[in-house]
Length: 235
Image (cartoon, rainbow, N blue to C red; front, side):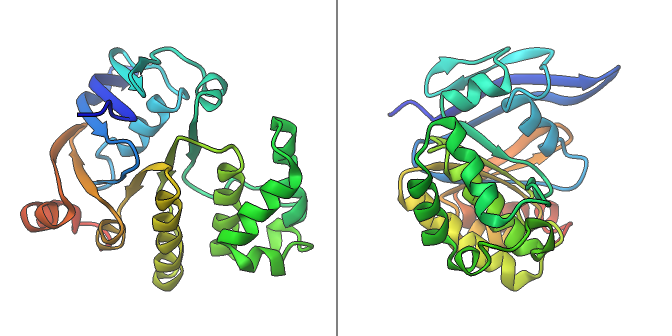
């Protein structure tokens, strides 16, 4: 069995005296799309922050492609292939779409390659390339955030609440693109409340509740056995 792209082992984290992650175990296979589902307050976003180096764990280990990356900073993790698109769109509103993308060239990626990738996945961004990012729709801003992330050529992409605040049709369109990105070899962990949409393009799924992973398996199996938990939010 190949080494997972991401393996989380007995991970604990807290805010003050309140323990939020209570022994999380999670493995994402290389080249797979995994949906991480669960209600608000389950600990999903805290898990993303710990994995991406934005918050310290109190105990436990995180392995990226078999290498222990505990205590690594966000910028160090980015250099070894971990890229996070956080909850809410992270774009520069006073720059145009093209300027937002061109900024990624400072990481050493040629500008033409960045633009080709962005406009290939999202033709609408080409139409809007001279428009200020702050005037884009929510869905278009999410497309731009995803394009900026892809410019770093990630091995593992963490998508935190991709669907937040977006219309269902836009969410479907974005997840169709997630599937295309995965076909290029990028491993993806989708943290979601829109369970059915995320499961449609996922190879595997895990359910988080009360700071722990309470179930994992194939999407159909998870939907059958954990519907009461994962469909408690938006489905």
